[in-house]
Length: 168
Length: 168
Image 1 (cartoon, rainbow over the protein chains, first blue to last red):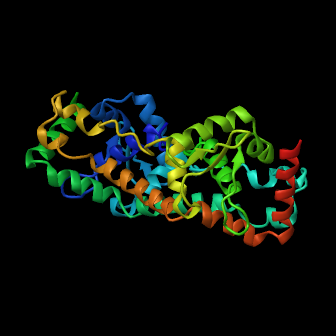
Image 2 (cartoon, rainbow over the protein chains, first blue to last red):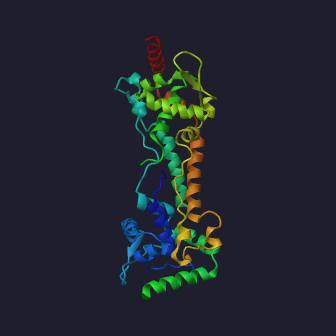
Image 3 (cartoon, rainbow over the protein chains, first blue to last red):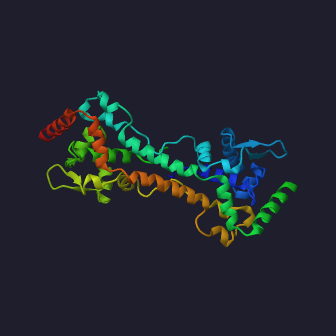
């Protein structure tokens, strides 16, 4: 099973939808983003509750229950989204195997329990390297990368699609 | 749920048991390692089947069905053990959300499908950073770190415990 949830993936793609081809922010409703990405509205609603609780988006006053980014897309990292949606997950769960060695007869000496287990330290440091990499990329980076690949008509198509949704 | 399985933890600790305080390799049977660490024999047996298949340990000819390291403990990295036991797991499973945008009407254009999704690239690179860190640490490093913390009597206690097991 993957470590990061599907919610993380939809969360990142949704926030990318909230940035246009010029890097400007675009207010969107959960209903629009769900329809645009072909995911159930309730599912995306739960993701936006988490993004909102983490202070990455704020609900806007306009009709239709829209959301806007709570800060510039260049200030929202992939790690921010991961932690908002999946919480502070550990890649490695230390079971303190070191304390259970039969030679200690259920009374591990102080030196054994002192500081984190060496195995855990390695695993925790490795997760930290992964998270540092996630913190190096922002929603703006990802949106720009996508728009650079796309023809100019893409931005027009998306805007037209949104306009049709709003007028219907 | 943690990304790395409990099998990884027991696999690493077991291989550390196969190195003595001087950094020399120590032949051990699965039964001894299971008793030493207080884990079920069958469970650890499955872990050693995987370590063996991955070429990290080889079964020795002696009585009791022992195992020895297939190469020096300084040449077995934490990443080797992780991949032997958990296989090639992905931290992030890309669902190709980009192809499903409603504006493409189920026919995503070529530019969308070209190359890996930008989100996936970030996630895959992050996992690579994590794995690079795991590859920087070996079983010998971990065993040495443990023995450095331990009093000299620890090595004697472990050897005595093994001798008792073998004579009973």
